[in-house]
Amino acid sequence: MFCFTYAGGTSAFFDGIEKHLQELELVKMEYAGHGTRYKESFYQDFDELADDMFRLLRERYLGKMYSLFGYSMGTITLVEVLKRIIANNDMEAPSHVFLGAHEPHPKAELIGFTGDELDEWVKDRTIRFGAVPDKLLNNKSFWRLYLPIYRADYGIIGKYSFEALKLQTAIPSTIFYSEIDTPLAEMTQWKKYFIGKCDFFQYDGTHFFIQNHHAEMADVIKNVWENR
Image 1 (tube, rainbow, N blue to C red):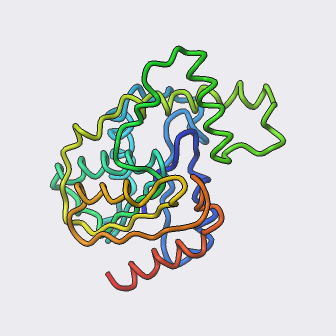
Image 2 (cartoon, rainbow, N blue to C red):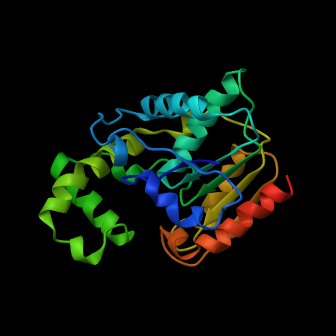
C-alpha cells in the first residue's frame, strides 16, 4: 500500500497505523523538501509533486496487487498519481484506494494572502489541527525549520483546482472522515470521481483523527484486502 501524507508531514506519519498492518507492506512516500528528503527543493505545484511521486512509485512497484492511501493533502496527491497510472499502460491500476480527511473541493481560504498573512494562517491552522506538540508552540527554532515546509505545501494546495480534475474510475474506494473536520455531506462528493463501490467510515476527532484510531482504521483496511 503506497501512502501519501498530509501538508507539512513526513513519511513517518504512517508509522502508527503500520504497526497494526503487519500483513501488508506499507510504502510510505516522502515528498521533496520533507523528512529524509529535506535537502531537496519544494514543489511549485501538484503536477511536479505527482510526477515525482509517480516516478518513485513505479520504481518501487513490484508487479503485485497494491492499493493507494492518501491522508489530507495526500488525497490530492493520490488522485493526481492515479491519473498518471491510468494514463500509462505499463502497470496495473490499484485494486483499491483509501482517502481521508480532505473534501474534494478547492481551499478558497488559501487565496489572496500576503506572505506574512499566510504564515500566520498556516501557524494557526497547524496548531488547531494538533500537528504541533504543546512544548513547541512558541519555539522559534521549530517554526524557523518547519514553517517553510507548511507554507510550500499550503501554497500548492491553494492553487489546486478540483474543477479541473479529469478523473472518473470504477476502482473501489474507502473514505475516512470526521464529521467535525470533514462532514459526510462534503466527503460524498468523492463519488463524482470514484463511481464504483464507495464506503464511508466516520471517526471521532478533528483533522488528525487517525492518531486516535489507528487500530480501527487498520481493521477496515485489512477487511478490504481479505475480501478483495
